[in-house]
Length: 247
Image (cartoon, rainbow, N blue to C red; front, top):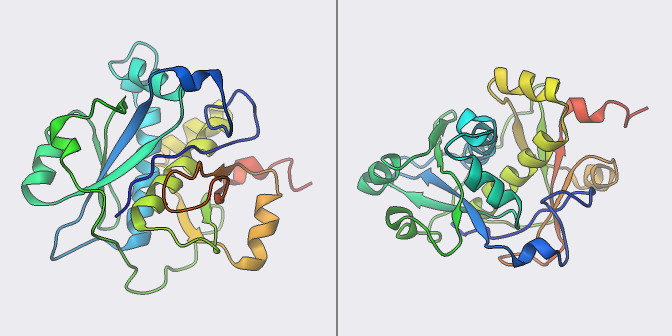
């Protein structure tokens, strides 16, 4: 499973997701750690892990500890003031139990478990997270994912890119974060109260071009790992963001 130390971009110039040089690049860089539980005998399905990782990012962003004067708010602000980086690592057994003992939030899917932690300095990972592996295991879907429910937010993956599960999990997290930032407060609250339902699916090739030119949030990779710089990886398709765009 590979790491994703990357930058996603959105159209607004003041978005922390941005492409190209920015004065904030001179600030100390932070990263959002995500740890996926992969027990040797029962690994989660790939799509389940991707969806759970995306929800985990949203749960942390909406948590009261990340807001205002909350105990994580300063690190979240420092992270968002620099490049938006997410790194996915894997754990099992005692490794997972040590990760669970650190401050963070565990989010579960159908079978997947992902723990998200408040942002840490790029050069200051907690010891029990720093020792976790970022490569060596990938995930598969035993059968193709079912169609998504109508009206459910969808994070569409680029059909032309071959990303490891870890890379795709981080990119799905980027897409969810872009959607969160673009939603009005009322829609954010409704999504949070519903438990952040979402689907992650690979777009059909004939749909991908329309998605990337639709005005919906698009994630562009910085090219630090696996894929070329500037590659479009995810389009965040939330029904509330289509209002006014489809007219």
